[in-house]
Length: 231
Image (cartoon, rainbow, N blue to C red; front, side, top):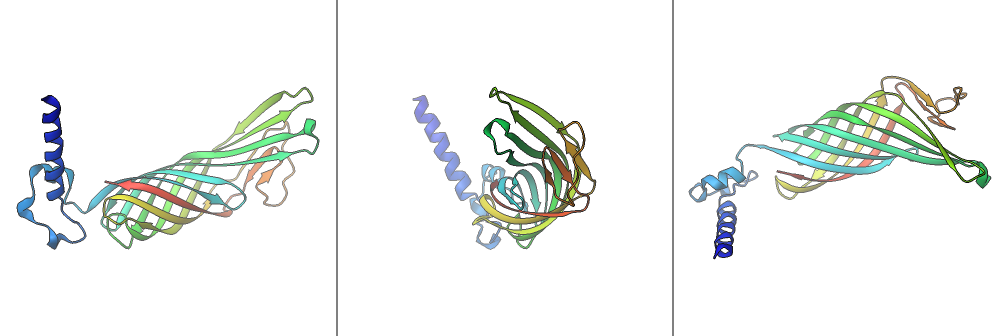
């Protein structure tokens, strides 16, 4: 008997929220007489939404950026808190017994703002953001006895970013996909290395052997594809 009661309650909630839903795109199609208190709870009339998005992409130079974004959209404007990570792997040495492996990773968090052509986080957009990041190098030395030794170093970096893209969602709330092309620059200069002495810098080259040179105000670009859900 209890299972039938639970099933009846679930079906009733689905029916009430379905017929009580208001379409933010076409408010004239809404039937106010069909709305209920439960429908109002699940389907807000406010022209805003919250969203969660994960993006992954490619950056010139071989880095692989990833972003987790928590956003709030109100009409054409949106703001978000972003968690970011990007990494790159390389190998030095020809002889198998003399190889070293470099792992370059930068991670941190930031905030960004967007302006959409559509409402509630839909359509084409432009973006501005700022972030605090923590670059780190991990170098593994492969010895003749086939043992690894690891040395790590890190420092802090700040950057500003800008870009444009498009977010596609067939409903004002629900599943969406987006593409975005970003440019960014670091506002401070960083040189981190794992050897005992700093390396000789080769112009503005970023990836050095056992070292990482992040040049101040150098412009970098990256492209990401994201998938998310707004509610």
